[in-house]
Amino acid sequence: MAETDIRIIGRAGRITLTRPKALNALSYDMCLAIDAALIAWADDPAVDLVVLDAQGDKAFCAGGDIARLYDTGLAGDYAFGRRFWRDEYRMNARLADYPKPVISLMQGFTMGGGVGIGCHGGIRIVGDSSRMAMPECGIGLVPDVGGTHLLSRAPGRLGAYLGLTAARMSPGDAIHAGFADRYLPEADWPALIARLEATGDTACIPDHAPPPSPLAAEAARIDRLFAGSDVTDISQRIQEDDSDTSSAALKAIRRNSPLAMAATLGLLDRLDASTTIRDALTGEYRFTWRAMDQGDFLEGIRAQIIDKDRNPHWRDTLDTLDPARVAAMLAPLGADDITFQEETGP
Image (cartoon, rainbow, N blue to C red):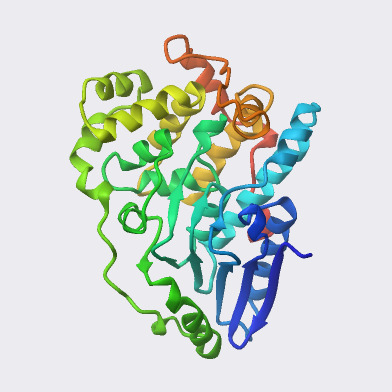
């Protein structure tokens, strides 16, 4: 069975993820299929807009399909992972720069690779079941698929908080953090999609008041605790704070990869309002290119997904991590740096 259902209905290009039993985890073939559709529709006068959705009620897309990445990396084949990430990031950039409206409807879990396909388009819709997160530091990666681009634009130090802790966002939180635009009860989604298909006009999308954001209510605390660019300093401030937010954050920071967390802060420091998603993806790719052989990715996957012992043996601790090692993970790759020629031509 196909992993995506790609078709044109009325005035809309339609992309539906069709792996609900796998929480619509994004495989390499799915990335290529989505990208090919976007290329084909960009100049197609029959397509006025693109609608992205997914089957099942548990997840829009809970992340990348990392089983094959683990298997190939464990065998010493790093080329597949590097190709997967390169082509996925190119697709993420295409979505962000797409010349036609892209409407994504994201129920349930939207994490990691799901953020990459659902959160860069023009109109990003969440419902009551929506839960978003960037959990990469827990498996030895940095928030990628353009995640650092989104995190760097979140209010205050919220981006650092979300990137380091992998905290899950409610629908109100996702809108507050800039990962989504509009809230719409999920019962109304089929009728909205039908209107978009019939009209090709985004003016039919309702603009309801979003639910409250618990993270917005904690903004002052988050800004204070996550100030600065040193994970050790952040950890110390968290330990000195007595709140549910700080308690959960401390558990996450003690659990996640020190190298990945330090690199995440390093990437966020390089981004601001003047940088683009391609700048973010370039930095992310430098880390992921090295993540299997020089980082913690394979151990993170082993502990979380394969053996499920939840006891990763990271290469570093917060106390022993050498800043030079972080810098090396983020250094330019020379001829191996990602390019985006597929979007713009030679």
